[in-house]
Image (cartoon, rainbow, N blue to C red):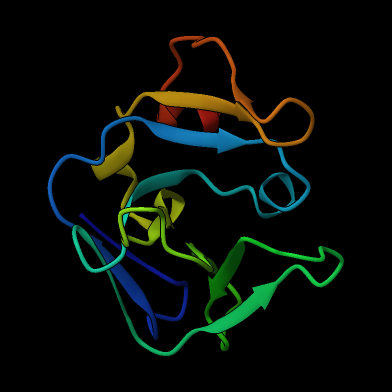
Length: 132
């Protein structure tokens, strides 16, 4: 699976089945309108092209950086600032940048990144349902 920014300067590739997609309601994700597919940096997800990075400055110890195209400003991915205990670094790509036919049937999971920081119950919607 492949996603590109609007101008085509930056793209991501995700090898294999992305599994379920996450819609998060945190203060950043709800503003970006992103839908995330997760994996580990350098494993199944690869980003090509130069990105600009935004890290939340109001946090004393931020844990994510957001990557976007410096030309058209599409949000491509987020990346953990620190590796997990196993040394791998979590990364997610915005599947809204993939061709609609490639992602329309992927199931959506909802995550409450605003209040509880917990998964919310499944409502059986898929990516296609988020576009209508």
